[in-house]
Image (tube, rainbow, N blue to C red; front, side):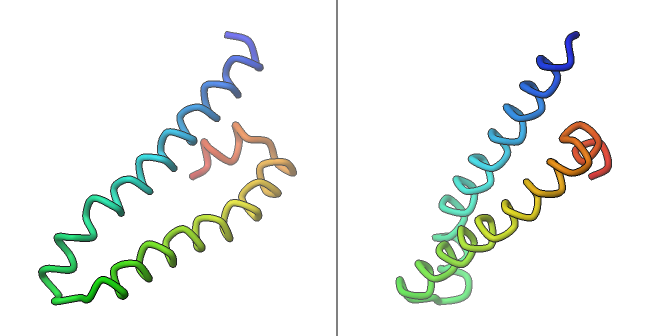
Length: 77
């Protein structure tokens, strides 16, 4: 397999995982809210905080991947 194809495959898998995680948060929120008796405002804050953390971590992850290579960083984690 060519190097470009491997990098494309890794990026596709990581993108799927990011979308899957964000959808999982949106699906699990009502169950968690019912268990802990949360209001709708608190539910929204949990979702917003999750997306903010994902956005904040994507910038350093991109810089680390650019410095060391996407394949090395993905295999290390």
